[in-house]
Length: 257
Image (cartoon, rainbow, N blue to C red; front, side, top):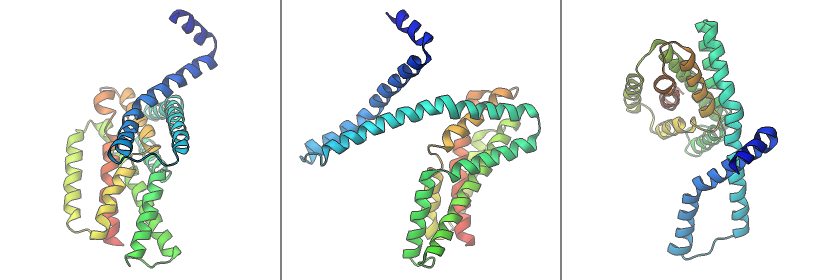
């Protein structure tokens, strides 16, 4: 039976794609089932209240499952392969300056497009206006939000450049991380109180839906091509740097502006 199904999926690519999506949907249901069960337990057993708008919640869960499955499939088909191939092509060219420029632009561009970063910078700007840190008008709020956004994007670009140099030079990741967090702690003591929480949160929002797949694929692609590098030990770690550098840059933004 399995051989027959395998023959059918091999003969018809559309069937193979649908079968792959079905597996992803089932895997997504399995992954989100624990949180659904937890929420249902506390809502029905602890709070002893029925779900409001149960039909809408069910429809929403359906969209979440299908959306996550399609997103994962898109990563497998598109973002991961293109990220790895670009990294390998640039590495083979042998021009380190083009390579570093590509790394910076990729980190900057993917972070600018992050929906989570847009949300947190807008909210931070509104809170800054309400607290009297900036003028409570649209122009000042927009300028503050854009300043934070570009600061975080530039920080991620720098982090990806450092990550590429680490792979090229074989630098130990743990020394970069330890040194980076020593700088974070030192700057925390002199940064304005209003910016510290935003800075630490800014590091987290960089690891979201767009940045993570492309940056991970970039690191693996470089480590695969460069002689003497191991994709497992050297290809990963860029995301850790991308979380670290925005914290430093945003606190410096608060100190300067």
